[in-house]
Every structure is written in C-alpha cells, then in structure tokens.
Length: 347
Image (cartoon, rainbow, N blue to C red; front, top):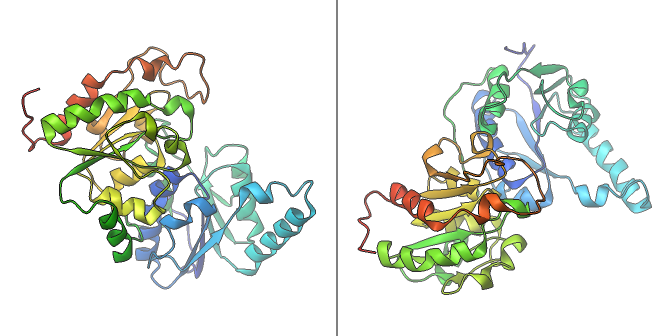
C-alpha cells in the first residue's frame, strides 16, 4: 500500500509518547522520514520521561511533551483540564498536514484527529478503536512481526525507502566524560539491567548476583548495575558491582552502554537501547514474546524461559515460575555466543 501524497508534507507529527523501548523502536521511522522529506518540519509527541532520547537529534525539529499523568487528571482537576485544553489548541496551531500515530491507542488516535491534519496515518490493527481517527490505515498482516518492522510499514506506505534502518541517540561529549568520571578504569565491564516496568519481566536479582564471579573469572569483566527506580531497589541484592542506578540521565545511560563490553538485561527500554547500539547483549525473556519485542535483528541474543506458561503477557503472577526457574547456565552460554573472540578462562 502506498498513500498518495498530493504534495510533500511540510509539517509532520510523529505520535509515540511511550514507552522507552517503543520510542527506540520508532526511531528508524524518523530518520527515513527525514531522508524522504528533507525540508519538512518534523515534531514528535512524547512523554517527558522519554524525551531525553529525542532532544538534540538533528533530524528532529521539535519535541512536544505529553504529560499523561497530569493531563489524565483533567476530569477532576481544574488546572489539568485547562492544561489539556491548551494542549489541544497547541496541537491545532501547529498546522500539521501529516500526523503519524505509532502508538495505536484511542488517545493517540484522538490526538492525531485533534491536529486537524489532512493525512492521519496509523496501523489498521491498532487497538482501542484508534483507526476510526485515521484517514489511511496500513495493514501489517501477520501479528508475529517485530515492532520495528510494523512501524517501518507505515514509513514505506508514505513512500520512504526501506533502508537504511538506523538508530541514533543525542549523546554529547559531556555525557561521555561524565561516565568516564564514574568508571575511569579502561578495564572492560558488563552492564546489568535488572529492572523492568512489569515485575513479571524481572529475572531475580540473585541470579544476576550469581553471574558476577563467572563473568570476572571467565571473561575478565567487572559488573555495573544501571537503570532507574525499577532497578535501584535491586542493586543492593547484587553485591560486588558498581551501583549506577538513578545516577544517569538517558543520554548518559546511552554513553554508559556504548562503552559496555557486554549487557545483560531483562525485557526493558534500556535493553532496546543496548540492542540499537549494537552492543554484545543477552536479553532475558519470560512473560513477553521476543519475536515481537525482542532486541531487533538479534534473535541469537535472547534467552527465553522454557516454562509452558510463557509467554503469557501477564503483568502480575502468583508464582513467577518462568523466570525464577531460569538459572545462569543458559545465560552464560549466551554470553559466550556474544563474546566469541573472548576465550573463556577455565571455570
């Protein structure tokens, strides 16, 4: 499907507020749009906590913040109601002629409609009746397709080439210098990312702790624990590591990961950053489907639970069996696959 464009769009809005991993997955669409429409003004509607992945990108002209938590209070908070009205007016005043909804929910589809853009594009299988707000619906086909490839179908429908598929982040020399102050030693390190937005996605912290000694002994790697609030409470359970949780901005986290010799992570936003950076990676999956949301183009980097109940897509669970019963042996085998030039020392 190719969407007929009467003229190249002048003002484009990408709607992808969250989550962190989803924003990473959407980045190739931005870079392809910039190649296809070099003179367009391109804006991105995003949640404040994800904005650090976008601010400073030369391909992006504007970041529009959507504070879901505050604006969601509009039905009972007069200040939030007035702010939501102002937000609606602001979207309309931008005079977008193309709105691309990559979130695919009722709210994001509604915002596409609020812009007044003549062209409003999204996926035909978007949820919560979001397609009713689109002028053009892009058919994906099989549901077993990676999120990045779903979004690329929208770019293709707008006439963008299929390549290159690029991931870039707004990291500065100051961000890299900051990481150097935290880790001045040139010794290679592994980054542990034990957090995840669902508790069911979290491989137990004691399993990460069991990796510290063999990574040092076999691969001469020290260990760093990173992430935000979801990881901060777990870091004390992983001894003999450098705790950098809640000590980095998003660009600084990117700088930390781009220096890593290895990243071991749950299914999380920072894991997708590591994958986009092309770092040696082991991604641990339990209740979610690595075919759809695993590290893009890196199936060999995944360790899946073998429990019969996985993937279940449940955010809560009474037993957490799928990850509790996953021990370190398959993870270490995956590490060896990711570090083939590193000859392991005798165990």
